[in-house]
Amino acid sequence: MNETEKLIAEINGVLRACGDEPLGVSPATPGGEELRLLHSARDAYVTRLRQKMPLYRLLPAALIPDMFLQALKSREAELLTPAA
Image (cartoon, rainbow, N blue to C red):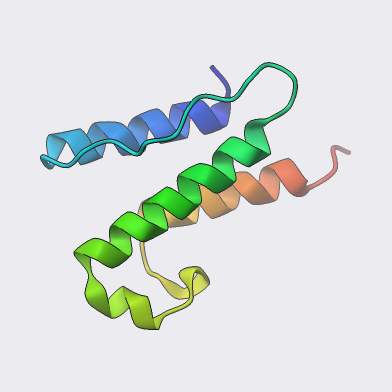
């Protein structure tokens, strides 16, 4: 399980604990589809946030103040930053 899959599992765990359905994203396929999985999870999560908090519809996703959304953005930055 890669880091993105672990992050999605954590988000799904909190969603389930709150009585919500988990995000409907499938795990990454072996071979580097982690970024695609991350984008799918982020989009599904932003959609969920905007359903729960209608005022978030007025904000671009980058400005929504949410801990899990920030973690997804951080993971995206890690994947897009070339290894030193």
